[in-house]
Amino acid sequence: MDMLKGDQIAEANLTDWRKLAQGLHARYLVGDFGTGARFVAAVGEAGDALGHHPSVSIGKGYVDFKLVSDDAIYRDDEGTEHVVEWVTQQDVDLARRITEIAVDHQVDADPASVSDIELGLDTARSATIAPVWAALLTGSVDAQGRGTPSDEIRDATGRVPNLWFGDADEHEAPGQRFHIEIYVAPEVAEQRIAAAVAAGGTIVDDSNAPSLTVIADQDGNKGIVCVDASAAKKD
Image (cartoon, rainbow, N blue to C red; front, side, top):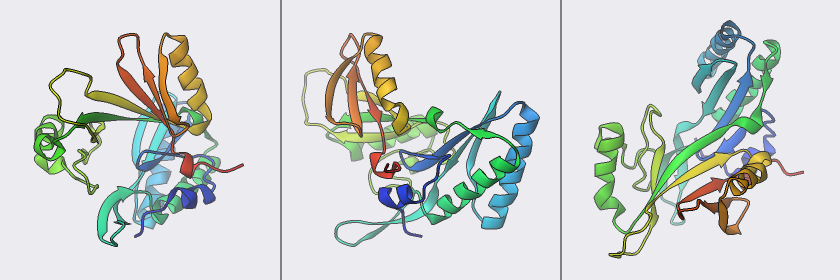
C-alpha cells in the first residue's frame, strides 16, 4: 500500500490524531484502568476486523496509540520502490474507527499531549558504525535499515527510540555528535520552545521553523523540536 504524503494526511482531518515522525499518534484520557482496558479491547476487535492494529500503551489516566504500516511503499526520485514504515490508508481508516470507539466509550482525546523521541547521530560513516549501534540498542544488527532505505536503526518492538544518522564531515576535533529530536503536536510547539528558553535554553537555528527548531542548553548541547507541518490541518 502506498505511503501517504503530508497533505493527504492533513486532508483526512483526523482531529484526535497527530502525525509525529513516521506514524499517527493519539492519547485518550480515561477515568480508571478498567475503562482504559475496555476501550483497548474494543479497539482490538476493530483492528481484527480491519486486519491492522495499533501499538498501545496504557497507564494511569491515559491510553496511547500509535498507528504505522510496516509495508508502506515509497518511490524515490528514480522510481525505485522501497518498503518502509509509514502512514498508509489503513492507518487513516483505523484512526477514524478508534475515534468513533472513543465516543462510544465516552473517553476524550488529548492530541496536544502526544510526543515522540528520536535520537540523531552525526557521522560521515553511517554504514560502518550503524551495525554497532543496532546491536547495542536492540541486540540485533537486523535493526539497521529496518523500515527505511537509510541506515537508520529501528527496533521492531519499539523498546528504544529510533536512531538516525545525519551527515557530518570527518574531523578530529571533539564535538557533540548525538542530539535528541522531540516530535510534538503543532499546537504546542511554540509553548515547548518558550518553556525551554525560559529554562535557560537558546534558540540557535529556527531557519526551518516550524518544522525544526534547534535549542541549545547552557553547555551548548542541542536538541531539536520537530513538527510535521505538512500533515497538520490547514485553517
